[in-house]
Image (cartoon, rainbow, N blue to C red):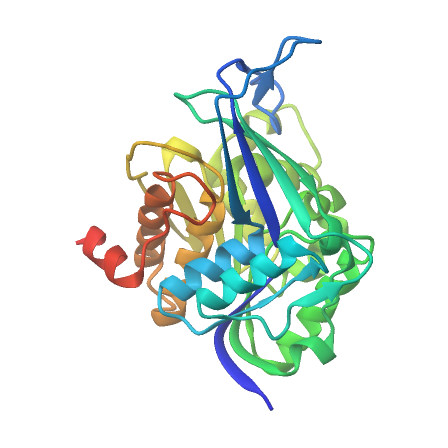
Amino acid sequence: MKKTFDVVSIGGIVRDITFYTDKGRIIKTPDNLTAQKMIAFEYGAKINIFNTNYTLGGGASNTAHVFSLLGLKTAIIARIGKDIEGELMMKKSKEDNISTDAVQIDSALHTGYSLILCSSKKEHDHVVYTYRGANENLVVDEKVMNPLDAKWYYISSMCGSNWLKTMKNIIVFAKKKNIKIAWNPGNLQLQAGRKNIEKILKCVDALFLNKDEAIELVLSGVKIGKRDPAFLNKTLYLLHILNEWGPKTVVITEGKKGAYALRDDKVYKAKVVKKKVADTTGVGDAFGASFVASMIEEPKNIERALRWGVVNSAYNLTKVGAQEGVLTRQELLEKIK
């Protein structure tokens, strides 16, 4: 029997383990356009950790959590291991009113983990070490998707050797069923470059990238001339190039500088909402899911979607964990007022 949803989140689900230390040093590397900051530690040192946290994470899990809190009927397509961590994730998702009917259980690989290393108390810069585990074997084909009628798919980072085949399966099925697609590509997709994902980009309704990711993707499809390095660091240039490649709406987040969107040849900008930062994990997922949640209600109101994104992601920053600070629909509307 088919079930109808506003949105289905597709991608990773992991256990996040966050370590905090003030021994890291942030090094600016502006000449490296795709990695303009680095975190360094003394070679061979034993690093003291002053706090740890265990939370739920992964792109599909994070975005599904946001959608559900914002009042949307939500399902998740993801893969967990046959272990205690997987059981905990299933329980938490069900408590969040997220349908887990399409969650797959892998008998060979463990549930995924992310080790998140935060480098300082003040800036909360971090790096993420990820063990994909069961996520590597995620299957998304017509048999999996057919029982879930949906208005939108929100696709986050894909892993495994068959990720491109999986993406093509989703695109073909979504086109046949008139389902809109939001996409926040991961490292493998960005590294594949324009040549391999161009057909996918042409079918995307909303593309979400941070600025470093946008630069990396554009570099894969633009012939570099003498003037291009300067242009590549300009968000407006990146928006227009990516929009030319097919996505109807392109959204680029730029940290403290806010967020930009391009739709129907019009550029929109939203300033960042300043809040005391406790943790930056999951901020991109909170932003993207909030943006799409607004679009589901008001498809043409990009200003509203940006506002939802910057406000909800700002409050997500105030608590430790990728999902802990996300607002409910009522809370979000009150904050926006």
